[in-house]
Image (cartoon, rainbow, N blue to C red; front, top):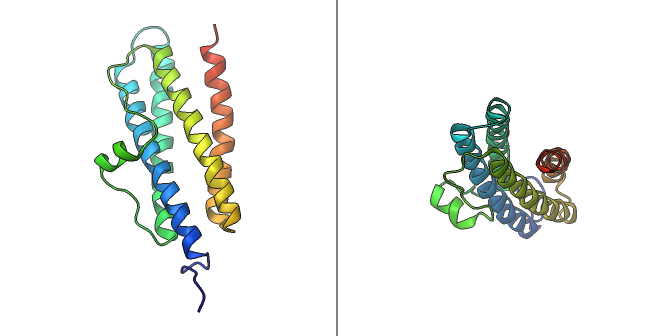
Length: 158
């Protein structure tokens, strides 16, 4: 008897992947809510530009949240689905009462840096598990975030 899940992957490796994906899911949920808050509360210089950028970030996070949750389900596990679980699990922390553009972007930049480290870890686990679905998802996310990190860092340079 083989110890694989419905999509033919090793069950134990899939469990490890799902656990890490749940951390990523929690991180994206916190990124989403932080970006929403920045979008609503941004004030001052570059308001119009940053208001739109934060909307772009939270809309992208919302798409990724759904993709990650569906990947966890595809692996045969349950995605986290309560905000208390997200707060307890995420490495990214909630940010409140930020209206300064540079401060908000600094939080976004550090969030993307945390995400990319976890995504690289997931990429390695997915490769070991021969999980091309998770591998492709992480590769796409990493490629996008490398460019975003470069751009946000360039914006924040003095």
